[in-house]
Amino acid sequence: MNLTTLQRIMADFHARPLPALTVRDKPIRFVRDMSLSIVGARRSGKTYRTYQFIKNHIEQGGHIENICRVQFNDHRLSAMKRADLSSVDEAYYALYPEKRGREEVFFVFDEIHRIEGWEDYILHLLDEPLQRVLITGSTSRLLSGEIASSLRGKNMPVALYPFSFREFLRHYKVAPDVMTSRGQGHLRKRLRHYLQQGGFPGLLDADERLHIDLLQTYWDTMVLRDIIEAHPRANIPIAVFSHFAQALVARTACPFTVRAMVGGMREAGLSFTAETIYSYLRFLEEAFMVFTVPVFSPSEKVRQRNYHKVYAVDWALAQAIASAEGVDVSRQLENMVYLELRRRGWEVSYFRTRQGWEIDFVAVRQAERQRPPMICQVAYSMQRKEVRERELRGLAETARHLRATRVTVVTFNDEETVALDGIRVDIIPAWKWLLAEAIPGQ
Image (cartoon, rainbow, N blue to C red; front, side, top):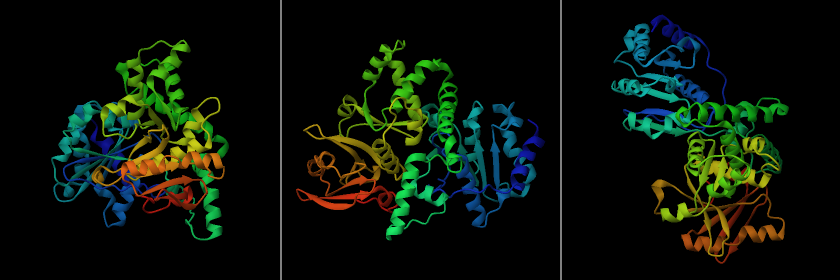
């Protein structure tokens, strides 16, 4: 490998100003002797999160020269092989020999997974105590069990989702005001915008007339790069996969079973096995394109026997991909609440009462499993009597069964506190719930 080319890439990065960015809330903390990978759906802002890390490093007194950043999708590195990887730190320390073994150096790599056998090089870098490694790239490759095994448990993944509502407001330089009537009105307007546009950073400053086209392009790229190309041995027929994936996304915030989907696809004349569809579902989840939610139960058999619910990485993406009627605004709101729970570190299930009434979310944290779970229901509006009765029924029974003392109903704009058989229920507008430092009811 030509060391001069690598040194030019490194020096060019050090000479360029960092791009303007919207600050993300997801923290990055290195663990001793471990690499850190930022994982998430394509176009969710992983690369810019590394720029934010570099900017913070400089603001805290660090030097840009202590960052060795290499983008392995650079056309100048297209011929790079496994044996060439050792040239990266060799080229860097040839530029800055005084830093070897004396200063903390951060190796920031985009798309390094393109090179076969890259894991061994990461382990080599981690052998030096003052070297840190930050990786971004194709999620399915970074999360697979094979790679985790190759890295010998020395990689810490950090999930990054599209913009939260707080980040969305920050991008548009809106200071959240939940107290005054004017501030609340402004937040309701921005929430409508957020529901319509979604959270992908690349859409925030784009012409709104292009949003659907951009989202469909994002989807096509995810399918090609993170599914088809990431799993070459699967020999995926794109027609079958696309039919399944679009049908699944159309069920955003709804129950689904693979058996029912297989039946529908066979009626459409498509040929495949059930095992194939289970593989496709796993590929979609590995690429952060969809998430499936089981029923809440301590029994693995019960969780597997009951239907799952599905949510998309972005509700606007689901709306752009789904055919026919699309994803209505109530389901988009539910998807938005689900993603916020995931951002805040909750493990999410749904719950079914003995009467068959469904509770949208039962959320627990891994480190707090001895505490009662948080119960959350989602309803766009509680103004109609039949909707109110439907959304409130089963909450008291669920709270008693799970020993929860408070539950929350997230709406678009309704707000009140009610008591159901001694259980406090907070009905909270989404614009307030999304901005709360601690989610009410936890």
